Length: 315
Image 1 (cartoon, rainbow, N blue to C red):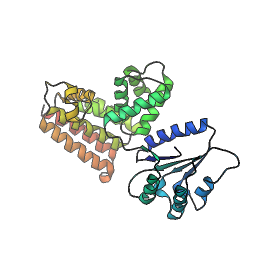
Image 2 (tube, rainbow, N blue to C red):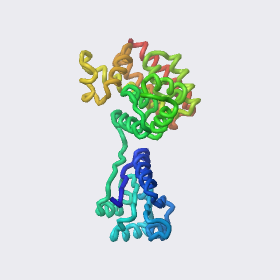
Image 3 (tube, rainbow, N blue to C red):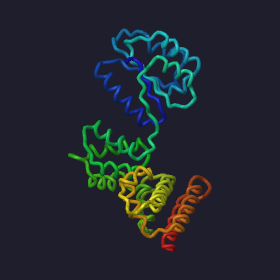
Image 4 (tube, helix red, strand yellow):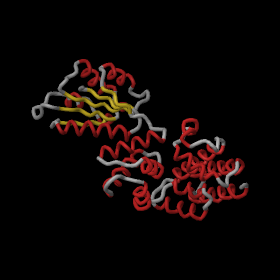
């Protein structure tokens, strides 16, 4: 295959796929040219695809294809009319309608398409982390992977970096104990630590975790997101059959079994009225940290106090 299309908005997946392709190309002593579409001018792509005097094997990586100017797109179109099988071309496109006409022309050339869509499910993020560890040549237990995903959050770049870091700092099979140690010593405090303490009723620990999280660079928006996610999980579990096993409820609730177990532990002390008040408090805080308020830290501290009150008042 001489043409690859990495298609989708998730840059971490695109970078991982591109990294594998580049490793293979370098092993074959391929001369690689990388062009960012926004910086390309007329002639750049034609030059990159022209015969080389220095290397028999060549490759062009064209990143952010959706940003390519119309004048430069013509060079790609001309190449697609007469593809050189000795040249490997890798196109990266973030999806959407921008640059769609050129994207459709590339698809007609029957490239190998590697989808890089946003990962929405926890199971998909866990698979991503598991594959990162396998790429590095390490094994991790399911519990360790779940704990790491929970600790790092939704950013796949951060998750990838965390996997690489813990792999370099440990030996053997990576387990939950290693993740806990790494979480405290490397990742520091996250919005999920704040959420766990707040939803568990430990307001003092929640405030301490909040200050630590902010001090180590956690965006206030990530804190409100983590708390809101925890409240949603508790609300889902509260309406489920309490006698059912977590793995039996996973599909219907759209949650991993470990998430259900965690939400069940946090459910103690919460009532429907308390949950409703807590949701209102975190929604207000979310609006304030996104610009509606003057002091996002104060807004978060106030929300934690209101959540603690909601939990205790109606328990």
